[in-house]
Length: 232
Ligand SMILES: C[S@@+](CC[C@H](N)C(=O)[O-])C[C@H]1O[C@@H](n2cnc3c(N)ncnc32)[C@H](O)[C@@H]1O
Image (tube, rainbow, N blue to C red; front, side):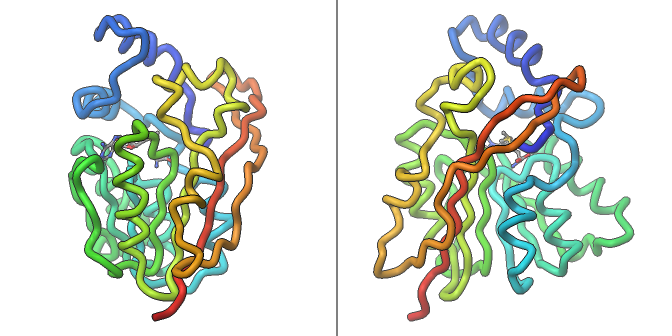
């Protein structure tokens, strides 16, 4: 989740105490509370994997799921994309829309924001030239529904980009992000894409340096899968 994890650990501990669970519960209340705090939860910068994988794409219609405060959506819009950001948190979407209004390189008309729960919501079939999901960590049962639904949302010739934390490279271990079962592997994402329908362009675990709250640098890695939907 971009460099933007600053502040996450203390927040996690507070949530843990509030819910009384071994892991925080990442439900709508959690995210509304988190984005309801003053200031930013994340850095506001686009994720490194998005910049690496989408810079060469021809702008069209993009869907960013789990769009948060809009760092990725705004970057895409500034490059000419028409972007829909979907998030469970209305507070996050409001912050993203406010950022869009402040940006001179973005026309707010290029962006639309939709509050929805991705455990049940699906994009319209073949309606986006890019569907991107960064750090959209959900339990396996929800990923089993969501990832194919996101793939269905990609138009022929379009791109699916799925990025997550690599469990083996997280400081503090996968449990720091809740139930370790929330994280996924390259093989899981690729395994959901039929070779008849998809050309897998990138499927790797990519090292990345992340700066912590005190300026300390963590060596992490991202699961990165980019695939192109075949025509027809
Ligand atoms: C780890 S953050 C990543 C935010 C952003 N994509 C980024 O990379 O900085 C996960 C995002 O997914 C959203 N989210 C979590 N569960 C969700 C759900 N069930 N439906 C929709 N959005 C959800 C959260 O509100 C949050 O903005």
